[in-house]
Image (cartoon, rainbow, N blue to C red; front, side, top):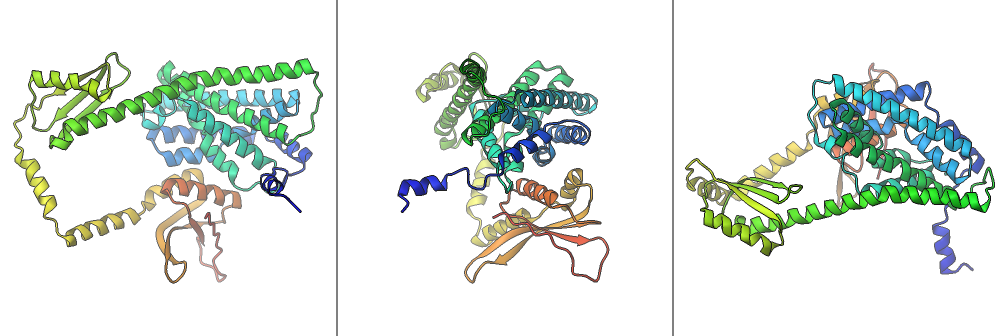
Length: 451
């Protein structure tokens, strides 16, 4: 009779559902090359990701990550390291280097010829990596390695491609080269390196844990040297990211204290703030505030500066931008009064209007974005549908009907579903196909549920 510990170990046993080890290794070897179709797919994915970063479209960036083949050589390097197959390791690193250079060149050319070179938020978010990016890459690499070693591969690999985000930092580095910003280039390359290295290392751990057969038995000295190199690489990458994470924590804490100060000293006293800007990286730090109608004397501003220390906001100078227009406070009073006299019916109407607007989908823009990723799709229609789960509850699920000459392949249906879930921020999507020409047979349906 199994004990409780045996049952627990049985639940977490990774050997269950595992594919043949030699077959897995052959699949890994076949997916590391960047020649022919893979190279074209990578170049197109780079262009799509660059466009997404350029226009600040998260949906297009996610689509590029789904079709990118960059994971192949990284996983291959992890397997090569895990089984001491140094030929596989060298080939994987060589192909990863080729892919990286192609990505940098293609993205740099795109951003160089693009008329829009503004620094978008999606670009900025890829220039300051921290310890959380390491944790995401490590966990994502574990999921990817486990999925590859299964008989049933399932859906984790597209999710890993989205979570670890290899494409955006590579394209951001290309943007840095195109505009001559080394800060952007080195910040993005550092994030890209973190993702590559820690996906590789987590793969190495899974391969070692599953006891894949070693191609070459190393002597104790050489094995120690390999472990030393891995440890050194981890340390080199972790230390700067810990510093960036600490900076992020300090900045968030600083911003929180600023919000507490503003709420206590101004907002709670009915003083309306029109403008607020903090400069965290300057010395001393700066807080700029602008008010709608309230004016403060120099002595009052000096007193506010003295109070900053009471709110644990050190080394900060408060600057008040005085409003030069003589606006009457009656405007604020009138707005407050109008809000207070709204009837329940008016509030209900407003809520219903907001709900209707929230349920609308921009089919035109969605179609344009989908056709970038899936050119065979000719037309779409998206709307929310209410399904009765039982007599007491209902579920609202977005349904997309697409028109195409031929049905989408199963893998493309899965990719489109993942993309739509991220794009529409929904946990479940249903897809149906309507052929372009009416036929006598029942319309073919491709239903995908992700509960």
